[in-house]
Amino acid sequence: MNTLRNKVQLIGNLGNDPEIINLESGKTLAKFSIATNESYKNAQGEKVTDTQWHNSVDHL
Image 1 (cartoon, rainbow, N blue to C red):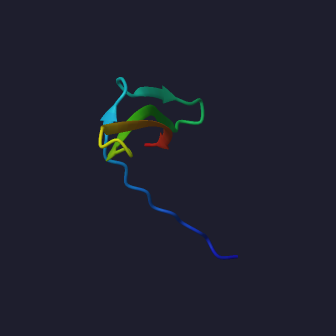
Image 2: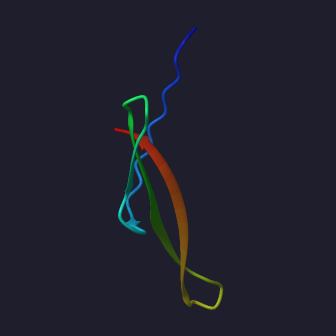
């Protein structure tokens, strides 16, 4: 069976300090959230900034 692997690069701001979790199995996880912003002008010519939050849990 083929292994699928996806790669995503998010550039933004951390919402808070990462939470480090040590599992009983010896593995370590990091939980954090990143805010990314997109800016555009609406029909009235006003600048609008849309912020989206991305939650992540990663193995260290």
